[in-house]
Image (cartoon, rainbow, N blue to C red; front, side):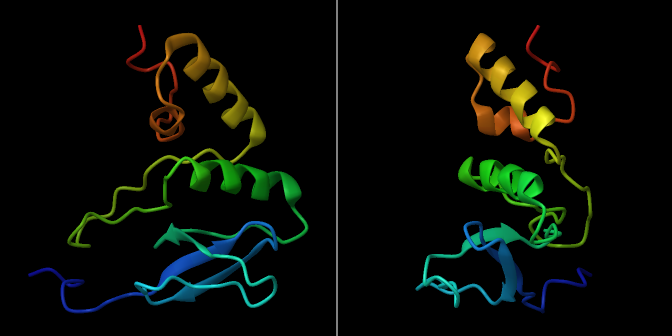
Length: 121
């Protein structure tokens, strides 16, 4: 029996401009940032927020979320955990942007791969 089938866990929501994150239940209306009144982006169940002073790490988070990806490790039912790769440094993002430009592969697809050259040959 699936342990997570009966509970609804809170998701991480992020305001990239304020460099702040919150855990909230999903809402149809969306959530707003209490500091700037901007829209919070859903970062998923397994998001680990960098320190507010770490601008470089927050720029990587902004690129990942802008590509439409979330920090998830759960399967849809929640019983299996296979952490998915997400870049942590700007060098990793830069390498994936270069490969996306060369091969024509969507950036979101390359941001989800541990090895960006896998499958492009």
